[in-house]
Amino acid sequence: MPRITYYQHSVRSRKPGRVDTVPWASLAEYLESLSTDVRSKGASGYWVAAACEGPHADAGCAPTDVVALDWDDPGPPCWEDDALRNRWFVAHTTDSHTPEVPRWRVWLQLDREYSAAELRRIRLPAAWAGAKLRAISQPAFVPTMGDDTWWVVEDSPLNSAWTPDLAPATAEAPPAPPGPRAGRQTPSQTSIN
Image (tube, rainbow, N blue to C red; front, side, top):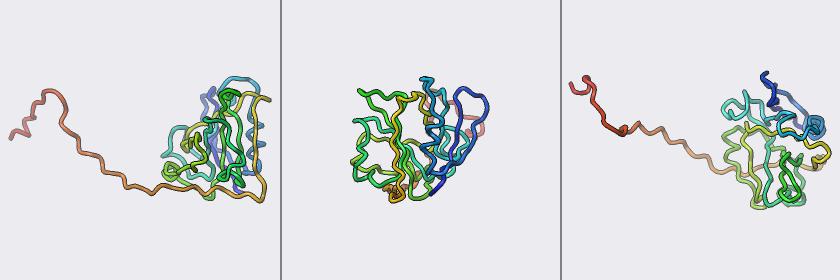
C-alpha cells in the first residue's frame, strides 16, 4: 500500500507546519484521531495532501498520489457509483455539513504521483456531478464535529487506485509585451534623440 505525504498546520499557531507521512491503510484512522469535538471550524488545524512549502502554493508542492474532492452538490456521493466503486477512498463530512445541505470531503488514492500542473488537467467522471477537485495546496480542515462527523472508508485489498482522465496539455503563451499606458505620456529625452 502507498504512503501519503502531506503538510499539516494549525490555524491558531504561528509556528510553521510540518510535513508528515502516513500509510494509506492508516489514513482514515489517522484523520479520525485528529478530529475533535470543539465544533469550531479550523480549531483542529488543516492538512494539504502533498509535501508543500505551505498552503495555497502549488509551485512549492511535491507531486502527490492522493487527491481531495469537495462533494457538496447535489448531495453525498453515491458510494456504489461505477466511477467510485472498487476505488480506495476515505470520505468524511465537513464542519459545514447538515442533513439539508450535505458537504463531503473525499480523499482518493491515485494510480501514481501527479504534479500540480497535471492535477489541474484532471477531468472528473460525468457521474461525479457536484464534485470539485481541490488544488494540490488547498487546505482541508480537520473535522471538529465529533460524533456528528460521518465516515466512509473503502480500503479493501481488492480495490485499486483511481486513474484519472487528463485533458491534453496546452502550451502556455508567452507573456504579451506591455501596452501603452493610459493617460498623458511624455517621451524621455533619450527616445527623442
